[in-house]
Length: 587
Image (cartoon, rainbow, N blue to C red; front, side, top):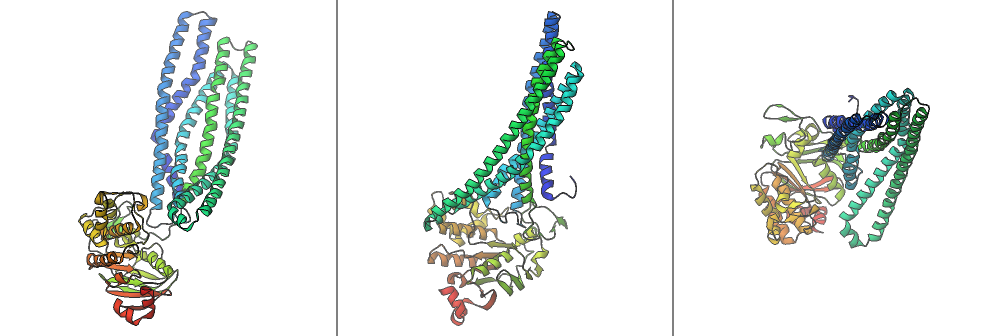
């Protein structure tokens, strides 16, 4: 692989090229199989020559025995060649899926920009499968090439004219097949794009089905999906027509070539240039050539589709990051840079008290925020009230470093977040979004998902603080009750409390929580507020909310209005002295 190649293409090469052992094994065994297949008509011709023409019964029996032994070898070589090729294909697809998931989940983000989840799923399944199939195509191509070479050599032995006809005609057929595959490659890429889009829209509609029914938007949603699905169907039909046209033309060319070989062999036999056994071998080899040439047509189809899918995969793998990853983390145990992307907490987590939790925003502008200045002391519980959701979204993206400020800086313990590796930022600051999803598993598994290898004793305290213990008591199997994807088996309030417990159980030095109690009753909201205060005492916590119950337990509250910090103080004082704050939290 050349150093100038993009990283995504490098991953593609390594995914397929990394299966060299299986591809080589499959190709060698496949070449043995095709060689044996090519020798079958030759051996039949020899048997005919000895047994029929010369009348040698022992010779006939000998060559029939050799033929039987070749068939046994054919059986085993085909079986193990196919097994090695399939293993290479499936393993390459697995590596590509892993690389895609790793890129989509990478801390720097960017791979999912402008793509629906269903689209990414389609690329990670269908496109990865098509690229993985290239490994099997290589095995088949090398085996078919061996069959053609052996056939050509055998025909050269029979007749120079027949041998040269095969040696010259086969490359010409392959070149024509490659040209014919170009339209299929273009249409296959379009087909996969449209299919991915349809899958993404379908997944999006299913996820929002309750909302669509609630507002009576089913007809519009169905019409939208019908239009997108129709586009996908049209693209699929165009690709199918291109594939059918390619296969049809290649079949006609192959049949014409085989007929030409048989015709030349027949004329040579008629003139007495070759014997009966040679004629039988020539006709048998001509018929055998149908197999390798047909396989080459299939290989061209697979390569065309694989190239189109590879381009789509590379586009995701090479997607620019939403934010730069920052410098490498430092492993405090060795003092050396830690370049590992598999360790969830590399820098701050190796030294539990390395992060004090001081946050500072210095004249930050981003989105709707304009020159925001904010200091959060280590261990402070700060409330952030904001009437404009756009201000909240911009603040959360900056604190979680999903984006960097246009101007100014966000600092942690006096260091700009851009100077830290993203893994360090994620280990130090957790932004618990209001709409966080749950995952398939039990309630307890969801709560402890972010705790990693840390002790699970905090899980009980986190569930008590968030009111999840009350949720567990109402479920049939308590904390071991299964949760379906996105937590759809739970009510909105139950999902919200489990998600909050998960954030609290992570026990990060800095926790930013956005509206954690909008779906619960007033009594539970007060309990959640007290639980957060007690559990996070001494740990830097930002409660981004307009809830009076939550803001009342904070050490200090700031009002984020019109993109700026316009007021600061304790909750009670601001309620009595600041009209905009009173309007934001009490109406």
